[in-house]
Image (tube, rainbow over all chains, first blue to last red; front, side, top):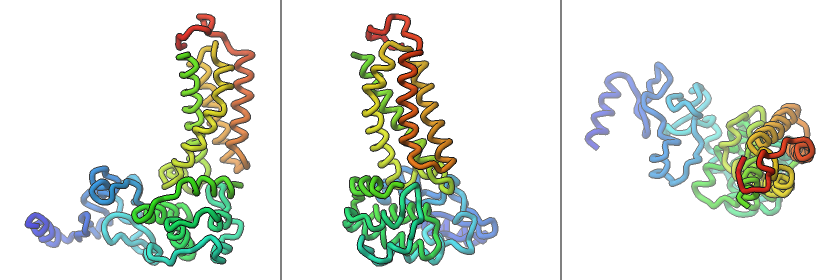
Length: 174
Length: 126
């Protein structure tokens, strides 16, 4: 506690901003300390899992060098500012009409509408991910980024149904 | 017997290599990062292992008395190259085409490849 206070005071004295997990220098737009996400020890202490969304291989980058449109409240992962609320989006179910909005769009050779409507994905993890992905899509987040963020977020709270994902991948593969 | 076991392991290893290559090149916008995304590696490892196991009898038949350390890198290289090129061209079922090319390559290697120096029916690896 004492160390934290000293560090915070020192940071304020030289114009730095302390986030929960690191110091940020706004004038340079970068972290002064390494991003602990992906550090094995930190992941073990934090969640026991090592696949949370992060900022890429550069541990000193700040929110993908895009502070206007992204947010990194904890000094860990960056997503577009208005997409942060998608982690709390309403769950969606396979028979929900919202899946139709994907049309014939594909991602990794999979038809998204088919994957969204895949009937064997009915567990809490799948419904959460379906809602999160739909919300991120509405906000224009690229499918790859949404995939990473929503899957990792769901993994923190639910068990991932790997067998069902495999079955749906086969069913929707084109 | 050791040689058969080695060839089955190499076959599964080849399947995994090809599956991960497929995942890494399937989505140009995501690129190599695709392999690190959640669930992608799970699916690639599952299907890669299945493909490797399916092709292992043919691998044993084709390479049992051949020089494994020459054949395997060539076969892996051909399969991965086919996957990379077909994925770049967005050709459907590139993984199945690569599997077919590997099967043909194994047949050709059986017919044309050099036999192992020690007649191939020992348990020596080479």
